Image (cartoon, rainbow, N blue to C red; front, side, top):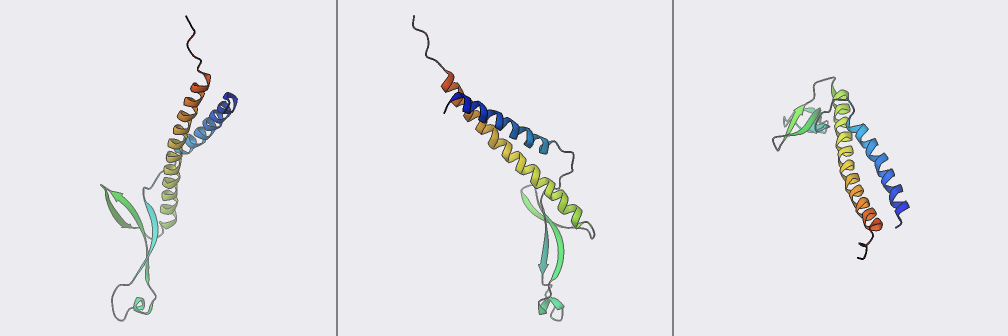
Length: 123
């Protein structure tokens, strides 16, 4: 690979890093975890769920102290909690992508250094 191509790739990586940093620096609140619809049977013999009409509720699955927890989403808050959880997913994706980009920049700069290096002058 030539030096010019490496410089182009470094510039593009810089642009991608800037985009990821913009995502990370947004002011939107984050809700760590995911919001899911839970469908289950209660176990009562005469209940509608025994006929297949399962009970539904929305829950937030999150980790606290290394333990997975499930919390009920308050009525009327499902859309807001899902939106906040999506902000968290976007943040985590941007963070992961930023790490990948920095590794790529280090690889490219190492290659650029190798191509630009000349042997020491003879005495």
